[in-house]
Length: 370
Image 1 (tube, helix red, strand yellow):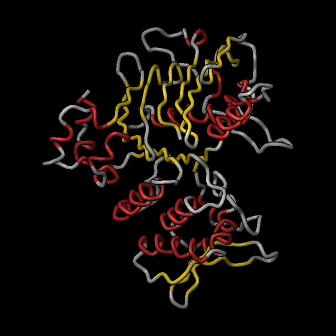
Image 2 (cartoon, one colour; image 1 turned 30 degrees about the horizontal axis):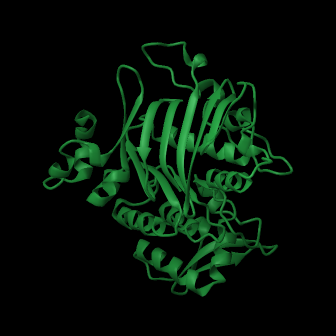
Image 3 (cartoon, one colour; image 1 turned 90 degrees about the vertical axis):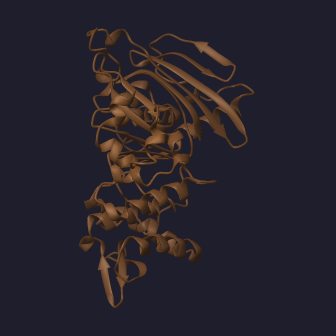
């Protein structure tokens, strides 16, 4: 779990320092910096995998040891911050990422400075080094011959064990290639195969079905998978005597079913990242989505980072959620993203006693508040 993060010089994030919780929501207008924050996490994930910095930023084809890795949007060319008032300086900028990680009962601090597709310096707890900017790999990507080997491995896993959820509806509606799966793919690959695995354990099946039954007004009786010609599974719901396969389900039902399944994976990631959580889901069911994220990220569940534009999602938040719900906006002069927790916006707690948080967001009050 990442308990604290500082990002400097990355895309629109000139300098951002945030304290994080188990569920972290990022809200704001388009191009306010929400997605850039998630992409900074992706840079850390790629470093944890041991990829070269050029590969982390620009992408990596499938190999014998790894799947296709999609680089950040715009690649290394647009990775660094450039102030609107000082254009042309992006080539001279470094990207600095610093995190505090809680790994089991221990806490570690990892920081890295990236310059011209290489690493200039890194620090893990008290172990620090300065390196030439042309060095491609993080020392976390190498096998250290030191007593800190186990610490390296723990931090590598904490950084790399993230899962991005960016489901493609056509993929969710398709047959899975595998018969069973421990984890769903970023685009929804092996969704039905994961359901097959969930259905094998009665306790998980019952919990999963209870969430889906609250989503739809229909009399949902069961979740199942339908076999294809070669036995490959297809997701389906049972309503009375009717079996409803994935291709005829609504986008909202299917997306919610897949997001929910991600919280019942056998191979559970440490971190789940979801962009625009409200996509395809009816406003009347967004409260259920908020409850899902809050309950499933609690305790031993994964840490969640999610973005939203929805005032309805905000309306269902409680004051206790404000410390880890972050409002994002762009500074008009510099173009830098400013990100602050709702708990630090002056007068907000007082105002929501008479007006909903969603209304304050819709009216643009938050943008003028800081």
